[in-house]
Image (tube, rainbow, N blue to C red; front, top):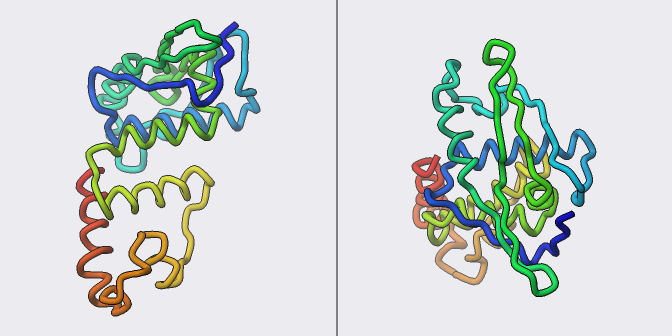
Length: 196
């Protein structure tokens, strides 16, 4: 049995997490949530997820990129320490594309379940994925990721709320919408869109 506190989990990968990988991780976490799998399990968990969800809205229908994404996810490692003893695991142990390409069976080991079901660990996974973003782009990504995690397809902010959430509420020059949009919001949108 692997029982690990949230603070002990670290994420390692030979290759950086791509937006497609993060999207797949979100969907796997959502499938665990929908199946009401607890954060602490004794055995690995098989999930069945429609491949269209793991591919994302703009994914190729032939699953070429999904296969690459799943292969890379098997290389994402978790490690940590529990009561002074080190441990290691993978996030995704095994995957199979079934039913003519329409379903994915994914085997998640106990430590992977824990990482995906624990909000603190999940935030660390997303932070690792967004490492290439900086400044306002990273702030916007975190804001959007939080809303996606909450399952909200859309939301509304006042301009003042958005300035505050982007960390520029104290800057007088950004009280003018045009300046805020030109120097904060548009560059952040461009960075996030370029990232994926």
